Length: 416
Image (cartoon, rainbow, N blue to C red; front, side, top):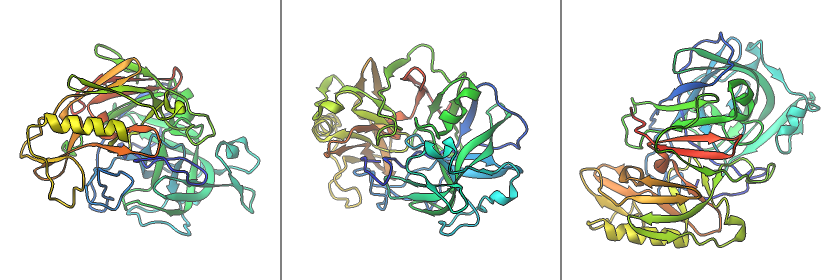
């Protein structure tokens, strides 16, 4: 998302979509595991303009990433949006009062022997903000996202299963999830819900951390224009640590748990360099001096405060020896160039606290249409924190260690 908004009762973000391959349930997990991530394109996916990632009705096509897991007994395949900036795992359930169209059948809890409603009195019910109590004394939820998508339904527990990259099935029991029967938003017909991977207590990593060797995970995302047959990768728990030559790390800055910022992953950006020209970050608010940027795998563009964006934009434009496009209304004010090959733009360095990461043109320029490359940065002027978007995260092995509050980056060819 391009900015944070308050949608009762949460600050949340629409996020990166990941597809994992499934194998039938038969084994419990007691250590870490890895999965392959596969992009899956759909002509029904919302479009976005890079100049404002909150505008989902514009016309720049974005790949989507779905997480496939199985839920229930017998297992039913679920394809959910993987969201590092929210906490709830949910899927559309039958019977549904108001569901958006999806290709696959709705999950029917009455057909699962391991489905259990959570009662209003249960501590699990109160892990979410402002739960409600149904007439049947079960815990109801309402969960909203920054693009105005909303899910409502019953909070329950279930068995879920992944297939690891070794082919071994990974079964996890008593996972809290939302059985949504009133859902609306910018979803396409491949998407059956959302898999939250934020810092809160109901997120996937928070729930499975003790079973997989720790609350930590890593991801390696392929670049935007990579052939969709090439998999990205993700690891959970033990073995997901990012180690070796070239690794740099920066502290994660905690937002207040239970507050608008409690679920997201904040870091501190101190400066940005375009080749050898460095710009210091000017923090307009003392509260943003630490934790002034969040890492969001679902926001495409990297978002900077207006002053920093203008400095970087102008310097990049000076260093690209081509005339930018000025007569294409679809592109708006974006910095775009016509070229039949990958754009040869400047190296950009993000100076985080204790960690410099270098971004190549593959990570900073993306092709919204054939023969056009656009600068994948945009701006915010409302005082919100910046965002390191998923274009910039490509070709880095990124490790999140929630126990030691650190995130690590290692330059990696994620297509290999």
